[in-house]
Length: 389
Ligand SMILES: Cc1cc2nc3c(=O)[nH]c(=O)nc-3n(C[C@H](O)[C@H](O)[C@H](O)COP(=O)(O)OP(=O)(O)OC[C@H]3O[C@@H](n4cnc5c(N)ncnc54)[C@H](O)[C@@H]3O)c2cc1C
Image 1 (cartoon, helix red, strand yellow):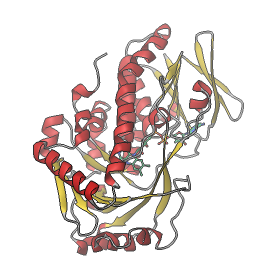
Image 2 (cartoon, protein in one colour; image 1 turned 90 degrees about the horizontal axis):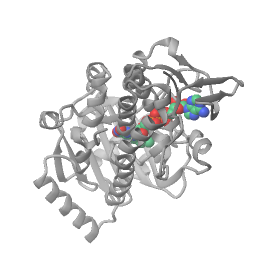
Image 3 (cartoon, protein in one colour; image 1 turned 90 degrees about the vertical axis):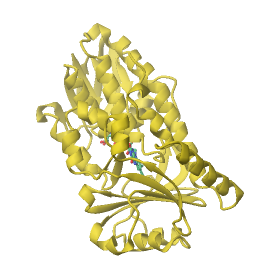
Image 4 (cartoon, protein in one colour; image 1 turned 180 degrees about the vertical axis):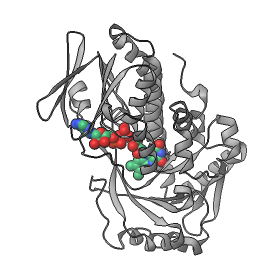
């Protein structure tokens, strides 16, 4: 069978590889002239790395990653530890795959290197999807019409395909914005930073971890915001990120002061849909279920979509596509929608004002960690978290 995948982000690339693996021909169509990823880190939980292994990419990604032994949650004002969870060998043994911290460009490169050049059309913007006579078509900005047995729209949080397939709806501003930066390890060596940490404070949280074999510190500093610029590449004003965290622990402030190139952008989500597929076309990744990144699961969910989509189409003939897409969506929709809600709740919890509510949260987190070795969202990391076909 022939498939067209729209969008060469993490979701579209993983879907392309998964469809190849299922034995189908794929054309991957991307609007930008080059493969690109934002300069930042990404956490890959075992549910994502297990699927990267199935795609034959785990070794390449792991070679560029760091492997945290645990994550700590800390109090904004003095860094005191609220609780810690295991992520190292114990998690790998439990979930059958490692927890990795990766530079997004390294992940993207491992994915693109596995896709044959002949299957990729860069510089090709899709402006419409339609279906007729047992085939699905994409129309490009230059007026070409490409046909296939199925079309997978992995066109990201601003998905136009979502509107073409299901009618107009907009990305929803989460009232939070993120500052992101990468710092060379040498510039923060004196700060004695904890390994992977999430610092919680009123209306804010601050995350840092090492990527690229420990050479770079990835920083994500999240603030509540009334309005935000939408671009991934909006530069913060000089010192803006430091001012936003005034009064925080001196290590946090030192990191923010030393950050050179800081990107600031609003965090958006998409409302859950009742279905992602129609006939021979389906959404995948952020186009289907964009979420706030507070459980570090958006890309992992896109990679899982890709894996389940490929599984649903193994051995499929053109006539089987609509049913196979139904099976894919049945196996993925509830889990991804649950992760969207869980990530939003985590943000509310992280940003509680100082006082009784924050104290109760800290006590709750400490009690949970005393009883459980793994993060609350780890219930979604196991092999059995994806329902059987
Ligand atoms: C601050 C932040 C931190 C995050 N941290 C994590 C984390 O630690 N772990 C994790 O798992 N997830 C994380 N995420 C989420 C993750 O980044 C996203 O869920 C993931 O990148 C979505 O991938 P995607 O392929 O669906 O979309 P995208 O990566 O947005 O890719 C969409 C692609 O489609 C192309 N495209 C769009 N429209 C068209 C068109 N009309 N024609 C052709 N091409 C088109 C675009 O150019 C782009 O290449 C984070 C997100 C943010 C914002």
